[in-house]
Length: 330
Image (cartoon, rainbow, N blue to C red; front, top):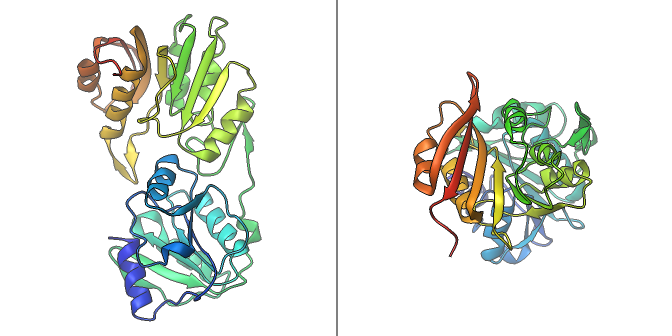
């Protein structure tokens, strides 16, 4: 569905055409997106999201986190975050000698993006299918002012980047968890899905931490974390937090897990984080996590830990403390 339907129909009907030579950059496709309408040998998938990078690499696609050289054409899979979407389209226009195809669902803002681009550049007629649209920009569109400004400073002395979680400021749930962490977390701490590093920074206030592993799937967020955490104890890992494994089991895992897939709430993501955390901990290890109050994580915690309590909270968030994992990594 989605891109595969629209792209196949647009190419097959002649609504869109791609050059017969030259590489084709595909920006930010999600795992499971069908790219079979494109010549695989000419495609380079460009994504900074580790699970998507791994998915397309396993399928035999050439993958990169940033564009490499010039392209004969580019395809942008529109993300939800408007600043990130603009930056991707601007980068595609800059790097492509041919058309830039933009595809997206209505819920991701494809219609407003089409209107914005029509005011800036020559665009072909859109094709509508499967609750979305696909259209092409003619070569040479000047969208330099849409380029990403790169890491930007926010309150607290941190830097973030467009499109990463809590790019405009410290997430209030993460702040509550940071304020609720105990005086000692043990020598080895893992920040699972650590983003740009706020929770790690709060944990590192403790001198008894000897090693902190920050695991984050978004390449841009991890780059910010490296800037924010100038500490020799920190080891950053670009990886899917639900699949990554530490070299040695940890004393504590801290996390503010994601709970959305697109616009829909998906508590299964948080449950996957909980299961992964349990497998990373020592027999007496502990998990500290924050969650929106309405999310039902207590059942999953009880399945993976012998002790579960709500340690703090307010009307919006709850701080959950679980210890003594009942299922250890093989």
